[in-house]
Length: 207
Picture 1 (cartoon, rainbow, N blue to C red):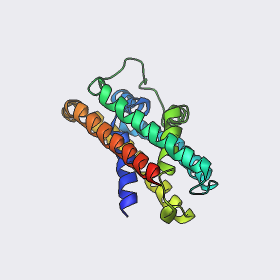
Picture 2 (tube, rainbow, N blue to C red):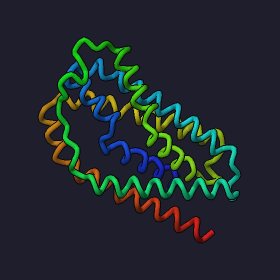
Picture 3 (tube, one colour):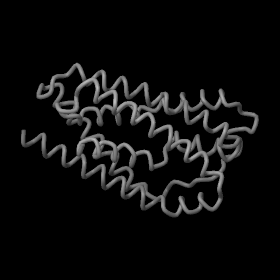
Picture 4 (cartoon, rainbow, N blue to C red):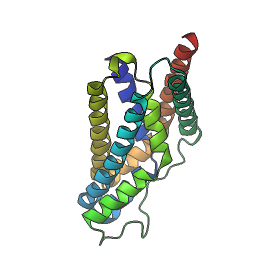
């Protein structure tokens, strides 16, 4: 249970920091409405699902304690460390606003879904992030059942967060408040990811 809470928290905190997927949903919602933006949310979630399946399937063929598995864990820790430093370094630099021509009002739900899938699947950071999370699974939670649970959970969180952003982003007051809180959220996410990476590195070095 503790491992699940750590991985789930790392996954959610990473979602809080705006990236290409976040801005696609925000701009689509601002210019075409949240219903059309929900298509982008589903497309992004499906793309994340592809990476989740690939990451968990790839890790499952590696035996815990083997050299490839340890190398994968080290790479995953280093990526989380890099991601955390990036969050802190660029905290407060993201500006949420409508982008002229980014998502025309005539955009259909299916087109938005396609845009969301392409945005998610063409982002290499998504693949690296899920591999890093998958490599953190211990032997007690490395079964097929646990991996299926993690996969469904992460897919649901990505989709739910996207829909929440799409619904809230059109509200000027909420958008303004989120913009003010964003630097602190990015710093918090960065500190958590750095602490998580250092903790995992410490465990690897002791073993």
